[in-house]
Image 1 (cartoon, rainbow, N blue to C red):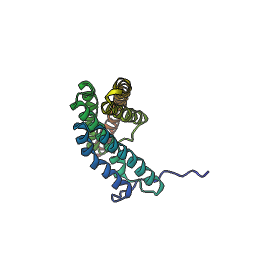
Image 2 (image 1 turned 90 degrees about the vertical axis):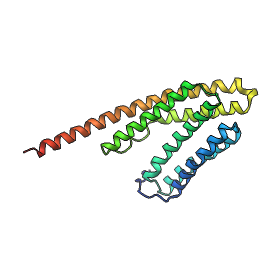
Image 3 (image 1 turned 180 degrees about the vertical axis):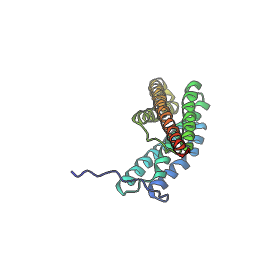
Length: 205
């Protein structure tokens, strides 16, 4: 079988995958409102639709060479927003402990700070590592399980423990991935400072 190389990301904005990503982002507030109002099954349907569009935009992007730099930013951003919305909604209803919300939100705040540092030194965002992918997968399994437990109180004692286990494991992996990004950012910053210093030395008379 012939191996097909991954397409080079383009600067295009109006592509089908990007439109699907914008749809995912537009559904975030709908998901949050449904969750806060206790419409857990409806919120799960919205989350399922979002997951399907995530799969679909990735398939279309690879199959029809529509991979774009914007899409590479939108996809992980949508994932984080859904995780944040799920945490806030469940936290508002006291269905997850406050410490779990704080731990995960603090990690995302750290990533925003790191992104600012990378932008300042003119460095692009780092690709998502495998730890981050596993963290997202665990959270996208754990948080919906907690929503499912809320939707079916009779099964709460069975479903909730599994939801919490996946959520806690996801939080740990989330911070592990964050630590890896922190190390990469420090290295990139030091390299940038070294290159700046070298250019300054060259310019000196």
